[in-house]
Length: 259
Image (cartoon, rainbow, N blue to C red):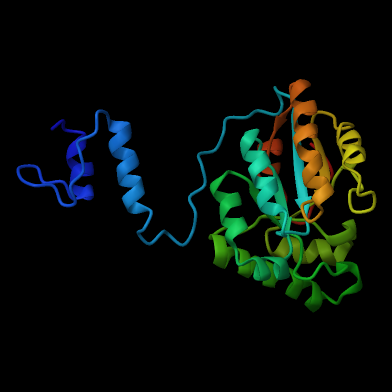
């Protein structure tokens, strides 16, 4: 047996000098043995928190980048959106609502992390933060920080105020929690106009460095994503997370609308 096969064979229960338990025919190549091992391990307890993929070497000062962002989820259509993004090898940023995470159970968020997407805080209940007291703002942010970290192990460093409504108090509470405020420069208005063609057209107005606002709770938006990805890819855009877009640590509390 080749040296590479020894640890895998032991994990599979293959005897090196006797009968294999369970009996598995020796594979013809390492890939087959790895698949057999993965099949057996699929029944093992999995780590609670996902392992993100390695950081990509994307320099948005050199290539055309656009950051697609999705608010208000996770919802019933989020899984389908993740399928589309994976098919196109596109990364995005999801600004999640705490109560939606609580209802979802965290499964979609763990998949987001595992597939290289970025998570941001969009408050607990989508309250207009400027209408709340300092304590109210703090509660909206803290509860969402805690549930996302519990479910994914990720401590978010980005936030988006619901409705884009912010002021000095929101900035101060965000700053004290290490959260930068992310707004946008391209608004698809997909929440108002539930028309996939309209969403595609408006997203197509993106320029290098744009932050595009959409919502993963609307089926019409998810239906628009394949075409808008194809259209922007044809213009040589790379789909990046917000951290990739800026390529540096952002200032907590500060507002950002585009690169």
